[in-house]
Amino acid sequence: MAEDYRINLTPDDVPKNWYNILADLPVELPMPKNSEGKDQIADLQKAFTKAALEQEFATDRYIKIPNEVRELYMQMGRPSPLVRAKRLEEKLNTPAKIYFKREDTSPTGSHKLNSAIPQVYFAKKEGVERLTTETGAGQWGTALSLAGNLLDTDITVYMVKVSFNQKPDRKNIMNIYGGDVYASPSENTKIGRQILEETPDHPGSLGVAISEAMEEALENDEVKYSLGSVLNHVMLHQTIIGQEIKTQLEIAEEEPDVMIACAGGGSNLAGSLFPFLKDKIAGNSETEFIAVEPSACPTLTEGSYEYDFGDTNGFTPMLKMFTLGHDFVAPSVHAGGLRYHGMSPIVSLLTKEGYINPTSVHQTDAFNAGVTFASSEGVLPAPETTHAIKAAIDEALKAKQTGEEKTIVVNFSGHGMLDLKGYASFLDGSMENSK
Image (cartoon, rainbow, N blue to C red):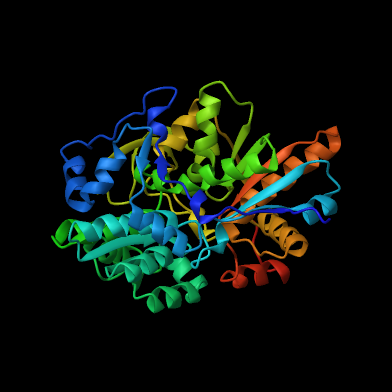
């Protein structure tokens, strides 16, 4: 009988609660604070839904997932499979076992629906007519647009201009789902117009796009802002990934030696790793946790751990996090979802305390890993996901040198079927490597 390398769960296995790591942090998380002469914390109450803020500061270890949200999770494809990358292992000739959690199987092709659905659900319950948001590579904007369609809520998306131009099909899909999409910086907002006046060819950044979306929410009573990463309520929603992985590894009778995820704002990393970091913090695990970022935007590996704004204009409170500075504009690498100047305060704290090991990857090395993976396993990874795959391949090759039979788990955060322009530039040799 052939060995089964795909570990599937049933709909009954979809978690009934989100896991809140705030209940288990090894040290206290520094709280957001206002900048001098401003009250951005009060502005949060105007910009965000009540539910988002309640979840942001909740200290309960588990928070119940509403039945309607759980039902939509199942309708949109949860639970997702955990697959052993047997052909990749054979290509690398490694004794390591490599598993990848397939978050690319959602209709939007990434993990982002895990937070988009509950955010729109709670906004709808509060009578919100429209949500605004930012998006880098477009996966968050796509997910929120679909969630808005499912729950009859209008969505406005500010997409980082360089990604808007690199990935036109992302805009098309958002439009199909009913989302209104604008290249950021745009003429829609005061901050957008100001930036364009000063720098007409500004490529955009996630910090700028967040400022534009926040400005709309702060100036319109019927509009709220929805964030795709960084803050705890988003991390919380994503923990269904790691909880499913735990169940799947129990079925496979495996204990993870290394767990890997790419890191931009922190959502897919938190979602897949936090339920396991809980055990590490409690002293019950020897698992190593690796966060992988682009060398072009090395927030965790080269940034400073300090208070900074989450956006370019300073609409958000100041957050204690690893940051490259809120006015940082990353080079136009194809991993648009990883071009953020800051990092989740919780991910930053756990990195500072030594629970997460950060590393950075050059763009061409990441794409090379993506091609290696796709040619072995048949699944094309998103540019963001290739960073995690590169680190997984490196760990598997280390195991080959030492002869260790390690178990490596990668969160496969999204597919690359709408990123073929990037792959084309890699294949024809025109892709510029990051610094």
